[in-house]
Length: 154
Image (cartoon, rainbow, N blue to C red):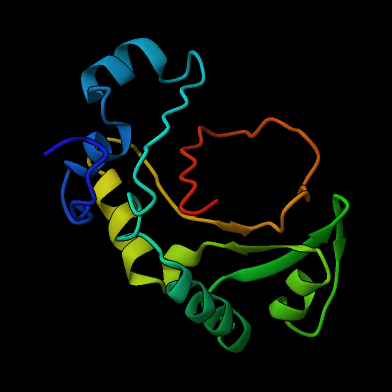
C-alpha cells in the first residue's frame, strides 16, 4: 500500500505514528526531527485522515461540545481575539475560528489516536481547530509543548 493510499488508519496500535509520519520512519523522526526542527508532510490523498475525522463528524463534535460540559472546552476567536457566540456554528458563519480543547475526552477516534500515540509519546491529547478561509485563530506563537498537527481538511 502506498503511504498516500486511503487505507484505514491504525488508530488503536503503535503503528499510528508511522502512519502519520509516512513516508518518514519513526526512527528517523525521533533521531532527526523530534525537538529539533519542524517537519511538514503533505499527504496527497484528500481522505488520508478520514479515520480521525470527516466533515460529517465535525457536526457531531461541535454539537457534543456545545451540549456536554464534559466533552471539551469550546472557544471562538475572530481576528485573533476571543469572542463569544451563542453557538459555534453561528460563530463560524460569522468568520470566527472554533476551537474544541481536549476533544479526545469524548470523541472516540481522537481518543483512540491519542491512546495509540502513547506508546511513543509521554502524553497526547487532541484539540480541534475549525478556521474559516482567510482567517487566523490566534497570533503566531510558540507552544510550551511539542505539537503534531494533522490537517484533516483544506
